[in-house]
Image (cartoon, rainbow over all chains, first blue to last red; front, side, top):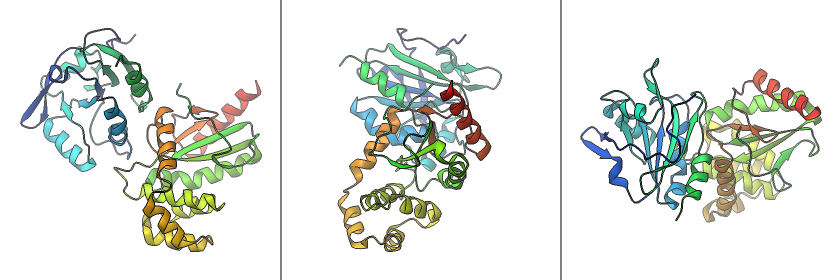
Length: 155
Length: 178
């Protein structure tokens, strides 16, 4: 039985480092849809891994005015190196200190391994979770669920 | 269970019997090393199943990660208009480390295609829309990286080494009989 926050729940606000010296709060993005993509760790050895895939699909997300945020427990310097190496055009948030706090609040932290699950949330412009999905950790969930959910949001 | 949203049609690039009991769709990127690795494996799988398998290739270029993936895909689509898709598809994967305009010209000549027409097609972006349509169809179908395989319309989430693909296709064949 998964603890992942279901659709209809208000999305817990958070403030996390988005670069080594800047922070981002979810509430700053109120007024547009937000895609929150939790993933276990940076530097997986796969081209077209989950974050890479979303990087390719960003124009489609932008059609819905949706902001994409990646989030893992890696620290901000790790994120910066990873993002630059792969050429990502969206922020990676560091759920680093306290470790996994935001992942826990969304019900997607893996205690034993100390990383977050692969979990997706689409949050509507009023800050409510419109759709959430927990993927088996070894399976990249792709973007079809995200796009379906964005299309169902009221305009 | 993630499923293919764009059904296989006569517009697709296919190899094998359209009435085959199993269809294998690959969404691929010519510059992706994993697809390069899968290329000979797919050929072995095709040889193994013969007319029990229809193979379909669709484009999923990861353009931000692979700068040559898009033009390579367009070159193959150009070849398709002259009935030489599979020759070009194979040549591109076999020359994956040398993708670029000079290679496409060389491969065009090899397949008796007009290299000037190919260069024009790439410059004008004639096949960009087709490749993009493949890509978006893949996104909506849950393609989650390259290569992504669909067996009888269901995304294959396991490894794509030879035994894994044989096993998955055998399972699909057994199911299609019941």
